[in-house]
Image (cartoon, rainbow, N blue to C red; front, side, top):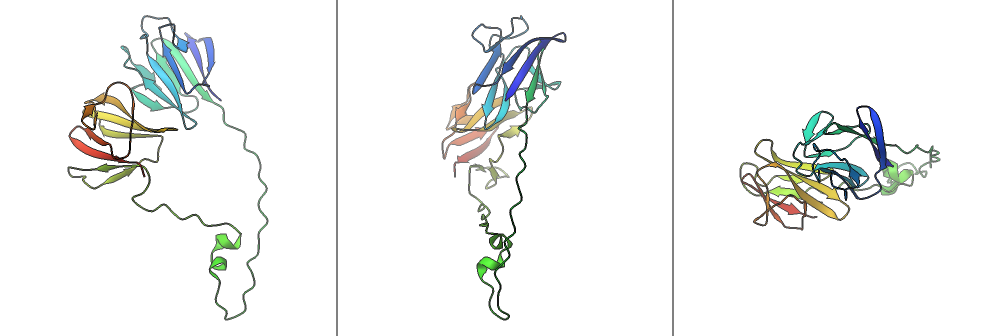
Length: 226
C-alpha cells in the first residue's frame, strides 16, 4: 500500500497510508495531512490514487511543490520519490507485491497431420497449438484518443494509453489528461488555460465526454472516447 513519511530537518513527524482516492496536504486543519507552517498554503497539494498509480497535484500554492528537486504542477509518483513543501519532506513509498511463482504450463503437442494433408488453421498458430487463443491487435483509430483539428498537425491522433498525457508547449500553455476510474479528466498545468467547448477551464479538473472540443494555445482538438 502506498504511503508518505513526513519529516522536518531529518526528524520523522508522521507516516500516512494513502488509502483514500484523494489525500490533501495543507496548512488548514481540514486537510488529510496538516502542515502548520506559514510557507505552506491553506490547500497546498493533493495526492490522488488513479488506477493503482499516485499523482501529485499542486493546488496553486504560493511557494510551489517540488518533486525530486523540480517544481511541478502535476507529476506521477514512483517509489522513493521525494516531495518538498516548504522545509518539509514527504518521502513516497510504494511497496511492491511479492511475485508468486507460477508453474509453467505443460506443453500440448500439436495434433499429427498426415503427409500432404492441409494444416488446420488452429494447428498453424503456435498459440493455438498450446490451447491459447490469440488476441487480435487493436485496430488503428480506435480507443480513447485526442484528434487534432487544425494547424500543421490536423488529422493526427494521440492515443490516451498512459495514466497522464501532456498537451501543449511549456512556457505557452500546458494541460494534462489523466486516466481515472470514471473516465478521462483535463487539468490545467501552466500558462494559457485550455477551453472545453468554449468554456475556459478553471483550477479544478474537468471530466471529458465523447466529442468534447478542446482548444489550447490556438490548437483545436477533439476528445474521442472510443
